[in-house]
Picture (cartoon, rainbow, N blue to C red):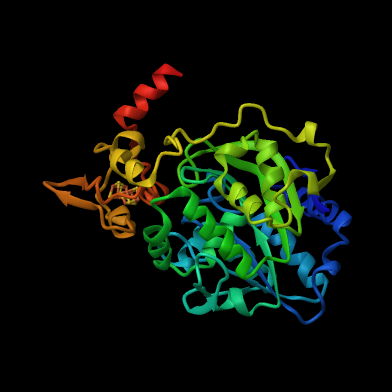
Amino acid sequence: MNLVVIERVGTYRRAAVEAGIDRLLRPLGGMEAFVRPGERVLLKPNMLSAKTPDAAVTTHPEVVRAVIRLVQEAGGIVLVGDSPGVGSSMRVAEKTGLMQVIRETGAEFADFSEAVEVSGEGVFRRFALARPYLEADKIINLPKLKTHEMMTMTCAVKNLFGSVVGTAKAGWHLKAGADRELFARMLVELYLVRKPDLNIVDAIVAMEGDGPGNGDPCDVGLLLAGQSAVAVDVIAAEIAGIPKKLLPMERVAAQLGISGAERSAIKTVGLPLHEARVADFRLPHISDVQFGLPLFLKNRLRHYLTSRPAVNTERCRLCGICKDACPPHAIGVRDGKLTFDYHACIRCFCCRELCPEGALDVVEGALLKMIKSFK
Ligand code: SF4
Ligand code: SF4
C-alpha cells in the first residue's frame, strides 16, 4: 500500500511551513527514515523560470528551506538543483528566492549543466540526465502543484523532467511531443530511470488555469508527501478534481502496472480527502480531441482538431525566447511580427510556457470549435 500524507498549511510563514513539514513527514517515519548521516541529498524543486515566489510558478523557497533544515538535522549534505526551461539556472535560483535560501542554510547549489547518458527500459532506451541527479545518494522531489497545458497537471512525476539538461528538453518534445500519450510515456519512463526517494508537494499556493508558466495562483493550503511520485500525483489530481481521462501520465503509469498508479493501492493519512478537495480548480483551456482516430487521420486533421499558439502583438516584445525554445523551429519573425509554421508546430506549447510576457494566446482549431459547440 502506498501512503500519501496530506497536511493543511495555509501560509508560507516560516514557522508554519516548518511545523507543517514536520507533521507531514511523521507518518512516513520522519526525515531520518530517508536520510542517513553523510549522504548527499539532492533537493529537486520546480525552477521552471525566473519568476518571483508569488507568481506560483516555482516551488516556494520557504518549503525548500524547511526541507533543507530537516535533511541537515538528519546529517545529510544538501544540494539543490534543477534545469529550468529557459535561461541560466543561477539566474532562476536568484529570482525565485532559492539562492538566498541556499546561501543562508549552507546548502550547495547543484549545477545541472552536465549530462550523463543512462539506459532506460521500454520505448525510450537512452536518457541523458544531469550528473548531480544521477550521482546523489538520495533525491527529494519538491514539485509545485500546477496545471499544465499539455499534460493537464504537473506535479511529482512531471517535475522530474527538469533532470533533462537545458535545451535537450526541446529534443524530447520533438521526438515525442507530437503525441500526448507518447510524451507521457517518456515522462513515466524517465521517472523509472531514477525514482526520487521522497516527494513533498508545495500546494500551499498552487497554480490553476493556463499553467505551468502563465496560470493563476490558487490558494489550496496543502502540503502532500509520499514515497511514490505516481501515488502522490493520483491524490493531487483527486484533490484538484481532475478526471483521469485528462491525465495521460496516470493512464500510462496504470498501463505499465507501476506501483501507486491504482487508486485502490493508495492510502491517505492526515487531513481527510473530503476536507482537502478544491472546488472549481480551473484547468487549462487548451484541448484537443482524442477520438481514437487512426494516427494518419489524426495527423491530417490536426490543424483543425487541436488548439494552436498565436501571438498577442500588443504584449509581444519580440524577445525571441519562444523562437529559440521551439523544438521544431516553427516560429519565425517577419515584418516585425512573430509567424508560426503550423504544419511544423507539434502543439507542445513550450512557447506559451516560457513567454515572460504572457503574449501567446491559444486559438482553437475550426473543427474542434464546432465539435465543442455541439456538446
Ligand atoms: S511571444 Fe513572448 S517569448 Fe515570444 S517573442 Fe514575444 S514576448 Fe518573447
Ligand atoms: S510553436 Fe509553440 S506549440 Fe508549436 S512547436 Fe513551437 S513551441 Fe511548440
